[in-house]
Image (cartoon, rainbow, N blue to C red; front, side, top):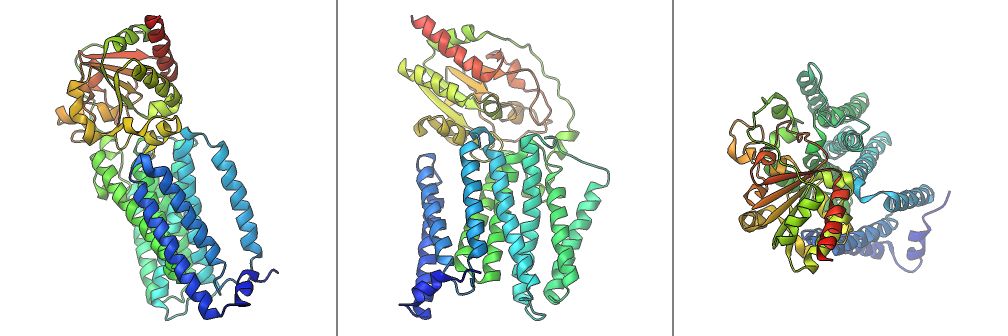
Length: 478
């Protein structure tokens, strides 16, 4: 067994009281890095800087933790550090940007599992006495939030990866099962807080938490993953915060509270962008409205063009807005989008991207893909800042987006997406929609945009279509 030689080294010329002071100061500095890291992530331009600051804070917190007097051996810590470093490096190098939602889901799962296991270990080692009611609250919440976030994130990963069906999975009596699961969770946790010595009930609580995570995410469709991801992020953060209270670790409390609060705020933003209620989110009620919606008859006809014909329209346009959606991620068309934008800017045209808050499968999914392709941050516009400009836009190019540009959300009160804020691309002089086929969005309804007089469809793989635009434009300029 390897002794905690890190603390021994510092103890050789510093007293325990000085080491405790150093730990407190280092945790405070790490917390400041976390706060500023979160602040800088408010903007795509400063997001990379924010990530670096958060990484520095986490590194400082990990190193400082090695000085803690409760760490008496470093053997398993070093093993875990080695395995985690190798696994993280491999995932960072080999995970494509289009799979970032799945990667994020796994991160939530692993972090939550760690928090849950810490809670189980804390209880198992008999550190929770029969009268330790306050500590039981922290450990209980840690296990509940960690367990449900772990299994919920794994289900989300399965849906995003295609291992599980992306559509909502429901079964007869599902609502009753969910109510019973919640009742068992609340009842078990409440009684454990009253009498922490009930060890069998504690392990029942841990198992039921895992079951609840599955039942929470199963009825949610893959198209609603942006809200799910932000909510799971909040749960993971709150689990970390509870871990901090259980271990009396201030930096965990601060970091977990920051993560949990930002996740909750982001969830609220996502629900507003999808015209959902927070109640639906908390109880996994996504898709219920969509599944029961009646088909809406759309009048009009579809007009399609080839990539060459569409490029001729782009050639005479001055103002162009590109609207990316999940289809861009599927076809991996972000680099082709960058190539087209560079060529259009070279021709002196005004080109921007319009980003809907819930485009893709995680918050900021489109921003991540476009940043990876090297698109200038100044070209990325959110929905609020660009929606009024569509009326003055010559051409809007919709790449794989569907419900977030469907005019039914503002025109048809019987539509299941009515009231959902959308990008007003239909106000543009010409709308080009790049799609493989006529399949509807997650809502299951026809997109009225496709039948508008000013809309043309360019069918085919988005990456190949965009490359075709560039080739045709070059031929026109030759």
